[in-house]
Image (cartoon, rainbow, N blue to C red; front, side):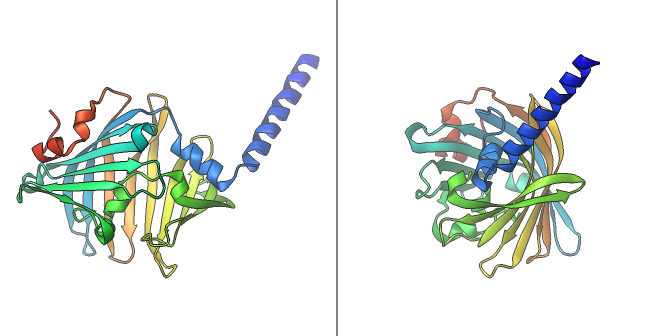
Length: 265
């Protein structure tokens, strides 16, 4: 009995210490944990993307994405390459993104349209355009450094039966397309379960919900994303069909040469 009682006290103290540590986390601390979730060097995923208009009509896209972290090597945070594989009329359409560690340095983005056989650089105001009919802008598609925003912990809130941290993130760049974002983060899993995007007039513009969270290679991984564009009355659903972490990816994948080829060999 004495040993059981001692173990109970030790366990209780451990819980209290853990809860105290979590209570002391700042908004930035929490978003860093989200950013650093799992030791992922590379990620490959294959997704089914469904576009839904205000009349309920749907269009389906099959998409593959390759992403590699560079951990600040030569100032680069990460590189991503996205290709459409279906339907046939847009097969080979691709987007290449390079994200930088320097908060003041804008991401590089290149779009390839097979019909035009031409690479277009996405810069300036074009980064806020919607990507290929989805409800994600080119800027949404790229990586985002934690310190691109200032983060404030608003408290905790129950979301779908789970107590989450509620974080307000305000862009450092005053010319950003959003005035702020509100995110709900699941403790321990350190996954964002929902994000609200507010326009320059502080009105809710879009809401992203993230669900079907499963462990893949010991990493908590969402398998369903749903973006509801309240302004356009349009939605984009993304279902992750296949995902692989930390497989070998050559640097040559993330070049305009591969982008123009329309596929990864």
